[in-house]
Amino acid sequence: MDPRRQRRRRLAALLSSLVAELLSLLILLFPTSNPLPVSDCATNGDPLSDQHDVVFALLLHLLSTSEIAATLSLPPFTRKRRRGHFSEPGVQSDVQDPESRISGVVGIDSVKRRNPDSFKQFFNMKSSTFEWLCGLLEPLLECRDPVHSPLNLAAETRLGIGLFRLASGADFRDISDRFRVSVSVSKFCVKQLCRVLCTNFRFWVGFPSPNELASVSTQFDALTGIPNCCGAVKCVRFRIRRNHEAVPPKDNILHENAENTIAAQIVVDSSSRILSIIAGFHGQKTDSQILKSSTLYRDIENGAILKSQKVHIHGVAVPQFLAGEGAYPLLPWLILPFNCCSPGSNEEIFNNAHRIMLLPAHEAIASLRKWGVLNKSTESDDRVAVAYIGACSILHNMLLTREEDLSASFDEVDKHSLGLRRDLQFLEGKNGGDEIFTQRSELAAAIRAALAMKVSEQKLRLQ
Image (cartoon, rainbow, N blue to C red; front, side, top):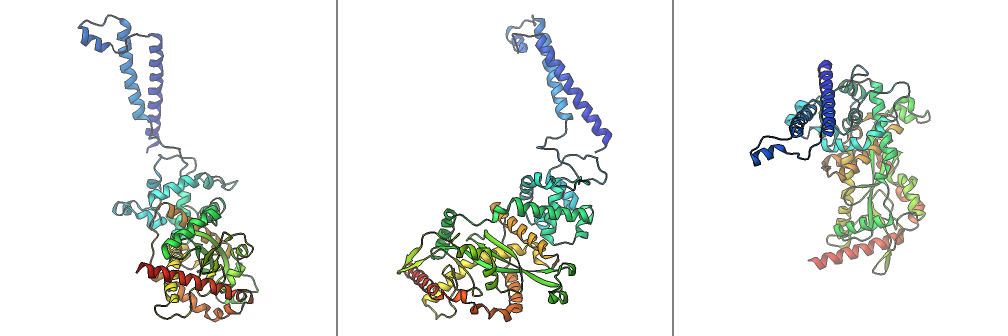
C-alpha cells in the first residue's frame, strides 16, 4: 500500500476515535432517563418534550457513525503484528496471513490457485499445519538473531526458508534466490530451525514411559496377535557428500570418494511414530555394530527400559521386546524372523506376523525419505547431517499428530535399501561372530518359539 495513503487512513482512524471519546463525554454531562426517545414518539404521538432526549439521540447517532468510521479506517485485526522481510530495513508492510505472505515470497500464488495443497510441494505439509507450526516456533525462531546484525525477517519467512531446505534439499543459492535473502541468511535460518527443533522439541521423539509402552504393546498385539512387542527397530542409511575439509585425515577412503552414507537407528510404534532415533554412525557399519554402539542397547542391557512384567507363554517368560530384521542378532529383547520355515508351519505363520510388525518401520523410513534433504545426496558434514535427520524425525511425528498423509512408495524404499545392502554385504557376515550376542541365543530362540506357537494357535481359533 502507498505509505501516504496508509498514513491518511491511520489519521482518519485517530480522529474518529477522538470524536467518539468526545461524544461519550457529552453523554455523561447530559444524562437522560429515557434512552430510547424515538419509541416514545411512536407511542404517545407527542413531540419530544425533554431537550436532553433530543441531545442524547443526536449524540447516539453521531457516536454510532464515528464508531463505524473508526472501524472502517483501522487496519485488519491480527493476533500480533509480525516483522516482515523487506529489501530496505525499517519499512513495514501490510499484515497478511502466513499463507499469503509465504506464498508471495516463494512465488506459489499461481500454483495455489490451481492446487490448494501446493504447500506440500514446497514445505512437505499443508498450509494449516505450516501456520500451526509457525505459531509454535515463532518466539524461538526470532530470539537468537546475530547480535550485531539482527534479521528483519518474519517468523513465517524464517520457517519457510528452513522447511524449504528440508523438504526440497535445494542448495542455499537456490534458496537465497527464491526467498530474496543472502546465502548467509538462508544458512542461518536453516540452522536455527534445526537447532530449535532438536533442542526445544526433542521430546517429540522421546522413548515412552512404562505406562505408555503398555499401550504400544497392546496396539502391536491387536495388529499381529504377538504380545509384549514394544516397537520395531530398523537401521536406515542416508547419502551425504562430505566436505573434504570436514573429513579426518585418517579416513583415506572418504577422501577418495566424497559421497558416503550416514546411518541412523529408529524404533517406531504400530502407527509409525518414531519412539527413538540415534544418528551419526558411519554408513559402512553393520546394523549389529550400530546397535551395540547405541545408547538404546546400553539402556536395555542395564534395565533402564523394557523392564516391565514378563508374559508367560507355554512355560516361557517373554519379556518386553523389539522386532528386528535379520541383520540384527537374536536376543531375548530383540526378536527376529526365522531363517528357514516350511509352508504352513508355526515358523511361517510367525514370520508373516513379524513382517506386519516391521511395516511401520518401513513406513517411517519412507516418510523420512520424502524430505528432500534426506532423499538426495546433500553436501554437509556429519554434524549437520545428524541435525537434518533429527529435525525431519521430529517433524515426522508432528505431522502424524496433525493427521497429515505420510504415505510413500515402498518400491522406492526397497530400492534404497537394496542398493545400500549390496554395498554392505561384505560386512554382514561379521554379525554372527560377536560373542556378546550369541551367549543368550538359546533363551531368545525359546522365546521366539513360544511366540510362534501362540500366533499359530490364534490363527487356528480364527479359522
